[in-house]
Image (cartoon, rainbow, N blue to C red; front, side, top):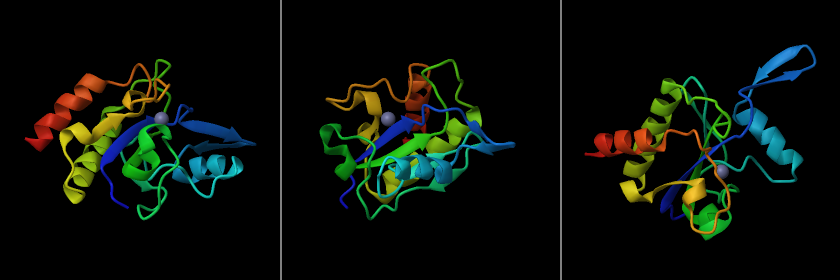
Length: 150
Ligand SMILES: [Zn+2]
């Protein structure tokens, strides 16, 4: 794959779900289950950032994603998903934002990308979504990213 972009998403889900008597965290394994239920071959995202900032692997990077049809991003964009719903009033935990920044910076270096190559899903031309949510702190993220790259 010739990765040219990084596309940021939210799971638009709770961070935990009840299953019988159990309360399970939403993580890459859980999202993979959801996506397999849709008939997909695997989780659609390449990485999942948990609320505590840990990064889990999703679909391997040698395969196109299934996270953003617009702009051919499934084929040129690495998909990263933050667990949470930032369309509602969920706040992105600081640890999670830092975990995202760590991953994005390392991918930028690994694939020789630039600051401008990092996109929020809703900003991809042709995408009709507010993903990763209207309450995602986009300005803070951008400023932090710029500082880390300078
Ligand atoms: Zn999205």
